[in-house]
Length: 262
Image 1 (cartoon, rainbow, N blue to C red):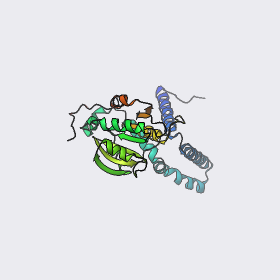
Image 2: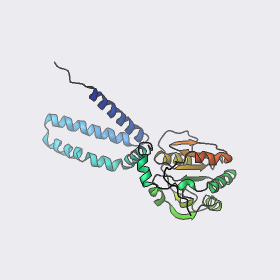
Image 3: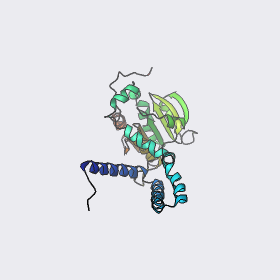
Image 4: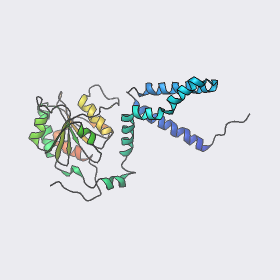
C-alpha cells in the first residue's frame, strides 16, 4: 500500500492554512463567529455523508446551502472581514508607496496645544473625554455616524463638547488637520481581553486604533487620568506635561511635501 505523496509544498500549504485559521480565530474571539463556523462545518460534513450515501433529495437541499455559503459568510462576517483587511492595510512598510499616492498631506502638523490644554483642564475636573486624532486611515464611517461640526479646534470648544451636561458629551470627537470635524461619534469597542478596570472610553480607544492609524486621547471620568492609544495598545496615566510628546511619537511622517492648513 503506497503512502499519500507529501512534499515540501504540502507542508507550506498546511502551515499557511493553520496560520489563516489562527488569524480567523483571533479576529472572531469574543464574538458569536466561532458558533457560526461550527454550524457551517457541521452542515458541510452532513452534506459529505449524504453525498456518500447517495440521498438525492437531501443532497440537493444541502448542496444549495453549500453553494451559497460564500455569499452568506461575506454577509454574516462583513464587520470582521473589514477589520481583517484594515489590519492588513495598516502594515505601512510594504505598502508605503501606495499611501504616498493617496495621502499627499500630513493632517497632524496642526498645533496640539488646544488638545493638551483642554485635556489637562478636564483631567483636573475629572471630565471624561475621548479625542480621535486622524492620520492616513479613512474614518469617514466614524464621522458619518456622529454630528458633523467642521469647526476650528480650540480649548473652549473641546471643553464645551465634553461638559457633562452638554448634548454632545457622549461619544468621541474626531480631529483632522486642526479642525473638529465631528462629535458624538461611536467607536468600535475592542474585543481583545483587557483589564476590568478599563472603562468604555478606553475600550473604544483601543478598538479604533486596532483598525486604523489614529491616535486617541482619553480622559477618565473616574480618575481624571490621561491615556493615549495607538496601534491597539494604550498608555495610561500620562502627565499633562508629557502628553504632547506621547502623541507626537505616534505621528506617521510623510515623505511627501507637507501642507499646512491655512
